[in-house]
Each structure stands twice: as C-alpha cells, then as structure tokens.
Image (tube, rainbow, N blue to C red; front, side, top):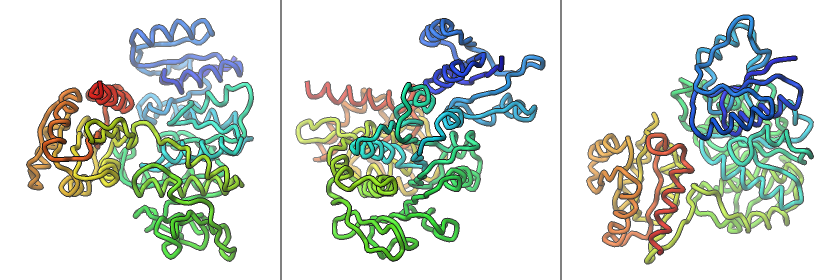
Length: 455
C-alpha cells in the first residue's frame, strides 16, 4: 500500500487526508502544534484509520519515506524537511494540486492577486450559482479544495481563490479562466523578491486557457500587453483606458464587454447594481462579470446576483450605525495597500483602529491617507509603538495607543462624537497573530463589541 504524509491539521489537511484514504493510501497527518481541539480531531480521525501525529517536528526517516507528501496552504514550502524531501525525490505537492488531480476534468475559475481576491471570488460564485450552476467557492474561501473533491456529486464549475503559496505547490493546475486582481509587495518574508512573487502568480495565468487582468492596477498595467498579448483587460476608467483590444470596462454607468477586437461593445449590467462601497469594488465587479461572460452566463443572471450580493465578512463590512456613526469591519485589510483602500472607501473624517502584527511593505500611501482622511487613530497590538513613531515622523499627532480591541471600541465612540466623525473603521494594516488566531477572529471580536453598543 502506498504511503502518504499530510502536513498541517487544518481544514485543508484533514480533507486531503480523507481524500487519499478514500483512494486507498495509508495516511499519516502531522501538525507541529497540540491542543484540546487537535487531540479531539486526532481521536476522530483514528476511527477513520488516519494516523495523526501532534507536536512533532517534521522529519522523514530513511527506510520509512512516504511515497507522497501533501502540504496544507499555511505551511511554508521551504521548511528544511520539505526541501530535503524534494531533494530525495519524494513527490511533494500542495493540497490544491491534490484536489486538481481529482477535479481536472471540470472547468475552473481561479482568482489570484495581492488584494481583491476574496470579494471577486465570492461574487463570481454568487453569479454562477444565480445562473443555476453548482459552483462552490473553495481554496482560501469557503471549502478546502479537497472537500469539493470529496463531494458525492461533482460540481459544474470550481471557483478557486488561490494564493501564491498554493500556486507554488501546484505544478499542473490549469484552470479554464484565471483572474489576476492586483499586484503589490506582500508575503516577501516568504517569497524573498518581488520578481519571484510575480513569477509564481504568472505561472497560474500561463497555464490557463483564458486570462483576465485588472488593467487599473499600476504594476499589471505597466507589464501590460507585452507579456499578455491575448488576455482580457478591465478598466473602470472607460474604453479609452482599456489595454489591448478586448476586455470589460465601465462607461456611462454601465459595465460594457468587448469580447473580440472588432465586435460591437455590449452593455451587460449597470455598475450601480453593486451595493458595496469603494472604487476597488467596481474593479472586482468588472473581473467577476468577465469570468461570468467568458463562461457564457447571461446578463440577467449576472444582474440578479450582483444586486443581491451582500459583500464579504471582514471586508468593509457595515456592522451597525450607533447614534449616526457607522462602524465598519475591515479586519481583512492585513497589509498597507488593503488598509489604504479601506480608508479611501469610507466617508471621512474617520476614526481609524489599526495595528496588530506588522508586515514588511511600503506604508507611505497609507500614511498619506491617514493624514487626509482620519480624525483620530487608535493603535492596538504589537505594531502600536512603531506605528506611533511613524505617525509622529509625518507630523500626525492625533493618535492614541490603546493596546486592545475592547479599549479601542469604547474610545472610538468618544472620539467619533468629539470630532463629528461619521465612521469608525477597523482596518488594521497588519496580520492578527499577536492577539488573535486569524483576521476572522479579530473581526468577529470587533463586531461583538460594536453590537454591544446598540444594547
């Protein structure tokens, strides 16, 4: 019997282990952590004949090498044990690649990019589902890809939000349609250089039949048609700004498609159908409509889905209005670019709650937005002292270090009233791991504190 070793006991790792077990592999699942929850999972999986090793450092012993190693999305691709395994010739793949091998007979839409992936993915899935298709969202959103592969009935389409980590570990993934939303420096701690990060993303697009690019993204626009001559481009600025001679753009308040260089442009839906705030969401709308039209979905189904689309939790999510002040949860803004977009999308002046575990990157655009759009800034988490220093350097003095979310929400009410600020915005520009297990838990805590105000 062939042996497989799955690294990482998250949703993806468990689904990968079950899929391999179903295919007749002998499976070991390992995780370097140990906790009550994980011990409980260990017992459940033992009943399915899946061995779980907890709290163990990963090493592969000669004479007991697995035939296949499957890596969960959150596990770095370059940890010594995995590098060594590849050198030894042990086949090492990501969980997404395993799912692809089971689902490659189906058409996929893959969405990648630094920011904008989640909203675009959720909107695409909503449109495909409104057209009567079974099209689950998976990958970094919704289901793990292997959970889709485990389903009794195969779906019509697979809609996958795919990070650079997942592309890196998926050698044969070749979607029908791929979308590249934005490109700015992120995850450089892992990918080392911007070129390396770009090449990983580009690999996915090159292996796809049809490519869609956000032509309003500065970096992608600069690379342009020289590298991607046959792609579909999008622009919220109208036909004159469309790169290449086919794509999707907004003109006179309509989303317009130009499917072939010489075909007449066709109006698809009104841009105002989307309820979400911010110019970046119009970019997301264009890319979602592009995917739908390239999959031959009719405009009426697109219109219905877009009008009913509620948005994505933790992404400029309106929590409540308290005494005329809107409380908005943008916990998913885990880097400077996303946080800059967050501030640009809400009414100003805003009271901003920011901080957490800082990431490397260029904060100048974000700092400029803070100067022009905020009444006050409340700083939480490990990054607070460094952010305070940066604000001082640019001459911004209206900040306070409050450390915790509880204190931030209480203080934000007082400051919003004092400065007549219409909005309190949680948009951290940071990872959450200093105080929370993930950005969702951070956003949920903010939501819970805001809803207590109403009581």
